[in-house]
Length: 327
Image (spheres, rainbow, N blue to C red):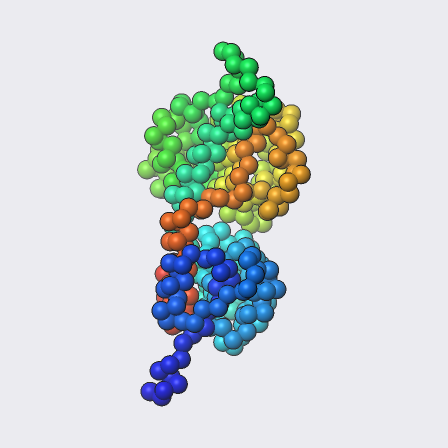
């Protein structure tokens, strides 16, 4: 082996220099790691650094498509996102080129499910509205004041019983809920472990006291929750979205919250992100809105960085990734 072969180290671009050090350390053992200077970097900042790299850890929801692959040719061998959702990735282009693509599913299930339960409680028990009452010196008290929705004995509807939806259902068993029902493309055998029943989406919306949106964003789920489907829900029901903002027609949701079509909403995701401070959504007392924090725990983000790093290293080496995206 020549000296050049012995000393050659792959070059890996990590698109955000605030990526957890745990994953970066793994890359640095075998690679030279580069970052954009700006935090956060723009997509143009990132694209300027793509030529000549062997791998990319793609951190952030910038469009990831054939343009990136073209700029990276011929040296680019592998990319891994640091996310479970892949709606910003041109999957068909990666599949067409048979290009090694990794992602980080499963590891964030617990963190996202925990937040979903938090949003459920906060929205159902009117936490945001109650705080506004304090801020505006409107604390009245009394036996009929600020009554919220019960969880015990309630019917839970989960749109999309994937891994996150299933984890939410497992969490809810401890709350002594009534029925758990779910909708989706097909019956899931794993639903039996939580006693969940497969129903149509319309039936789910009509029967549920709490509705969790857990489907991925794609052409068939964009605006899945809209003016028509919102009207199927009970006026006492609570909608929780921990998936993607575009799955819900946000204008229709704002109207439904204003006119009492539904009781409340708990949202980790919205449209656009970041949400402007003057958004109509933020003016509603019955909307609990948090800035896309589903996977934002220290351990979860560290674990995501570790999986993404191993994906990139394996892709560069031409070996199977730890978590390859299933084309």
